[in-house]
Length: 484
Image (cartoon, rainbow, N blue to C red; front, top):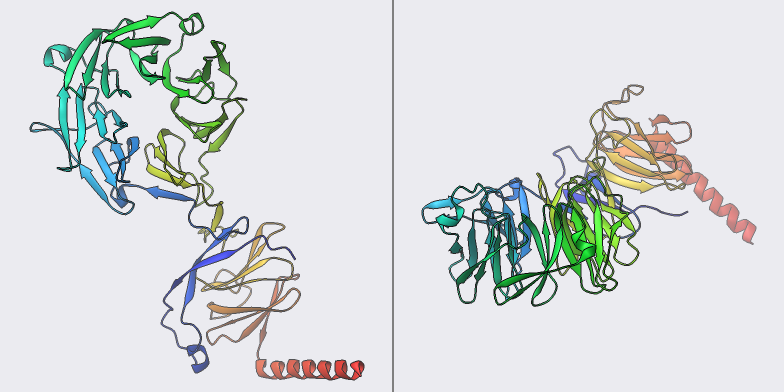
C-alpha cells in the first residue's frame, strides 16, 4: 500500500472533561489542525504573510532591499520599515520639520556596493541611512528653482555603481556624487521622460523612457547617446530594464506590450513570445544562472529561460488554498541568500516564499461545506488498508478517500441518522479491512463500515472483546496444532 500523505498536528492543552483513571494515564493532549504534505517530506511553511497586523506600517509596499546587517527593509506608503524576522522598526523621513511620506515623496529604495541604503523620491529628495545614529539623513534636495511649477520634478531616481545618484526629468538630469557631495546638472539629451536605467559597465547605460529605449555613455559628466538602429526604432513605454551579464542580453519589460530582448552579441532586438502581451512588467531579477523572474501587475510572477525564452507562470495566486500565494500584483522581488523570495504584494503587504521546502496542503473545516474536515480539533488520525485517512475530532469522525477526493462524516452533530449525545472521539482502529472502531470520552465504542457508510454502537463491548480474544486464542491453538 502506497502512502501519499504525512500528517502533522499542533499540540494544545486538553479540554476540561471527565476522564476515567485509564484515560488519565493517556497523554493529555489533543490535536488542533492537520497539515498534509505532498510528497513525503517534513517541511515548514512554504508561504509566509507579513502585514500590518505583524507591524508593517502600511499594506502598500513599493520596494524591498536587504541591508548589510541582514535586516530586510521595506519602502511603504508611510515610510521605511526595518524587519529583523520578528519585529518591525518604523523610520520617519524628515525634511526639517516636515515628515516625508506617500508615494510622491518616497519612490525608490536602493542598496549600493558599499551596503549603504538609499531612498530617492519624486520630489527630488535623497536620503541615506546612517547606522551610527540609526536614522535616514537627508543628504541632497533639488533646489526650489529646479522644482518650481513641476508636479513631479523627478520621473526616475537611480544610484549607479560609481555611487552617483541620478535625478531625472524630461529637461535635465541631476547627478549627485555621494562621495564628493557635489551635484552636476546636465541636459537630458534624450528629451524624453526617463522611466528606468540599467548600467552594463563603468560608463555605459541603457535608458528606458516613456516612448522607447536608448544606449548612452556617461563620461566626465557628459551624457552621449550612441546610435543603435535596432533599439532606436522600438517605440515602447519601458517599465523595467534588466541586463543579464552571462548571456549579454537586455530584457525589456513594457507597459502592456509584453517582453522584449536586446542581444548585444548580434545587436538584435526582438519581441519575446511570453504570453504577457497585455500585462505591465514591474520588476525583472536574476533567478540562478539561466533564468529570470518577471513580476507583473496582475499576473503574478513568471519565470523565463534566458536562452530559449520559454516562459511559464511561477508564482500566481491560488485563492482556493490556505497556504498559497495570496495576490498577483507584485511591485518588487528580492531573493535572499537562503533562496527565499520576498514579494511586495500590492496592496496586501509582504509575501515570502521559501523554495527550500516542497508544497503542502492545509486541511481545515469549512463552515457549511460537507466536502471538508468535520472539525478542526483533531484527536487521532489513522490510515486504513486502502490508504484513506480517518480523523477523530471533537465533532465526530471524518473520512477522506484519496482516490475520489471525497469527504464523509460520521457521528457529528450534522449527522442526524444517529442520536448519539457524545461527539468527541479520541481513538481509531481498523480491526479488519474497511471496519473502523472509534472510541471517545465515556461514549462507548462505535463500529463504522466503510463500504456501506454505516455505523453500529457496541452496547456489550466487554463481552465482544472477550469473544474476540477467545477467537484469537482459538486461532493460535489451531495454528500450533497444524504446525505440529
